[in-house]
Structure formats: C-alpha cells, structure tokens
Length: 256
Image 1 (cartoon, rainbow, N blue to C red):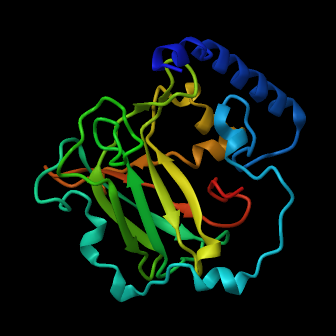
Image 2 (tube, rainbow, N blue to C red):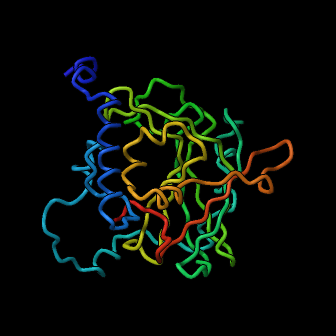
Image 3 (spheres, one colour):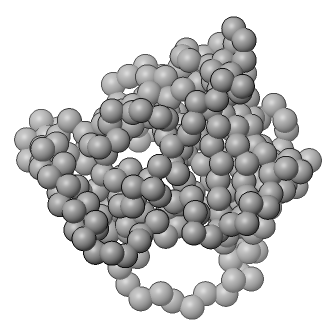
C-alpha cells in the first residue's frame, strides 16, 4: 500500500479525540483509580501489538541475567550526561538542563541508579533508520545520554529541547515533545521505561499515548516543571522532573 493510500484509510484526529473523550468519561464514572498506562488503549492503535496476548511462560531468571548488560560506576563517563557535546559541534535548538531525583515511595533517594535518556532532535527526528520523518538530521546531536544518580538520588542532563513529530497512528497525528527515560534497577529484569513531557503542550489532549494514562493526576506526574533556579544565565533553560518508583504516587511507566 502506498503512503498516500495508507493515509487515506487512517482515522481522523476528531475520531481519535472522540474515543479519548469517551474513555475519559467512562473512567471518571468507574470509581477505580488507574495510575499506570493502559496496556490496551484503543485510540493508541498499535497498543494491541505492544503487549503480551498469550499466557506467561516460566523463565529461569538467573539464565536471563547471564545475557543481560552489566555496568559499574567506572563505566559511565560524566561527559555522557551532556548531549550537546557528543559529536564535535554545536547542535541546533534550545539548550536546556533537565534534573530531578529518583526516589522510592517514601521519598528516599535511589543512589547510583543508571538513568538513560533518548530523544528526537529540535526538528523532531530521531537518529534511527526507521525514522523517515522528513525533517533534518542534526550531525551534532545523537539524542542519547546517561548518568548515575548521586547520593541524593539526583540525575542531571544537558540537552536540546526535542521537537514534536508526526506518527501514523491516525491522520495528522503528532506526538508532544518528550524525552524517554530508562532506569536500570539493580539488574536488567528490573528496568523501567517512561517519558517526560514539557508543560503547556497543546498536543496533550490529542495524543493517545499520553492519554493512555487515564487518571489526570497520574498524567500530570509525567510533565516536568520549568525551574528558573535550574536555568543558567545566558546558557540554558531549566526543567525539574522527579521519578517516583513505588507507592501511590509512582511515576507512570511503560512496564505496566
């Protein structure tokens, strides 16, 4: 099927928005709080392909660990947290600083946690062969970085604010600007993945992935806060976003 034919059979944004509104109304009337993304969320058309549909099978956890990545503090260079200096030149876009704490449900810091991020560039394009969005690649921006949390559970990255980008969930579908976060845990089987968004994005109401977290308060926990104290004079804007791993205020993650 040609791209034009594919677009022709796609649902409209109005159809998707109506489905989101209906599910939101159903959730409000249900009386049960859901703080994690729905695994099967109809407006997110490919969600049925992104979760298990068959019974779980017993696996040997020790066998899995034999093939999992391992790392130590000496394997993570402090420069890996600055995504603006990775490729021998200045990337295009709004330079920004993103920081926050990784804590458990009681507010205790999670120390020496490996935090990895990946994101689109300022034009909304990833450095990935499957991303054929007709926006320019930035030769000075890979969109990938990592760091370890400190004794207070704090992570910190310098990067470029990503742009929104189109995706073929439906006709004229655009993802809000976001940064993907991965937390390694103490072993590979504990890994959690989530997304951080930016305040006031007009695409929030239209995006099925963001809306798949049907509880409004839980959705808000995915949105960073502009912090003028984190902003650096004549250098970068600043955002703060904490990640809560457990408890009733747990940050929504993609492992639900």
